[in-house]
Length: 221
Image 1 (spheres, one colour):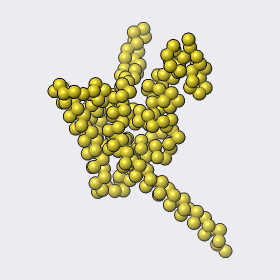
Image 2: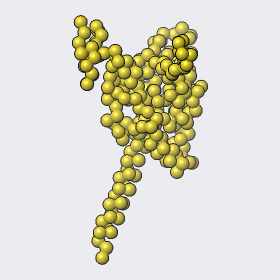
Image 3: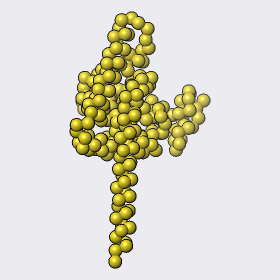
Image 4: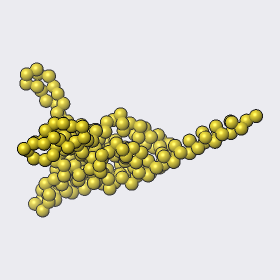
């Protein structure tokens, strides 16, 4: 027996199992929540720009090098996980899948691009938390944006009838996504939130300066 999908505004029927229709089940798996919208490059761009501007103003600061090293530490952890699995020691398949994905990301994207995107995602979370429906949704979007840099989230296939190509997205197992998200959070969560608060303080300071100037102008005789 089916019932109406429980996602807000959706009147489609559910499958025999669960309380979501097929479309919202797919969105839950792909985006981390049935109502979560994808975080696009357009949404993330202002935070990347802010990150680059601060890096440009502080070229000699060791923060940027250390952020890149944090990504390389994740890659080392992934390689260790793969080696442990291949040696026959006990392990969980989804951790092995996560480790393989991290190694592939490292082979196809520069450390600076990964660290910039991961930090920018945490800056977005701090500044616009309403964009994420849940903690799980944020983590899924975090992994999606970093995987996108290495173009690992999609492949192109040829349509048998038309001969044209289309983009087909390849999804990781949810538990593998969670493993990668935890690794990224451990390394980039703190720096991302710190930089976000620096940005907020500077915005508040500029607003205060603007208000002070306006107040002074009104007192001119």
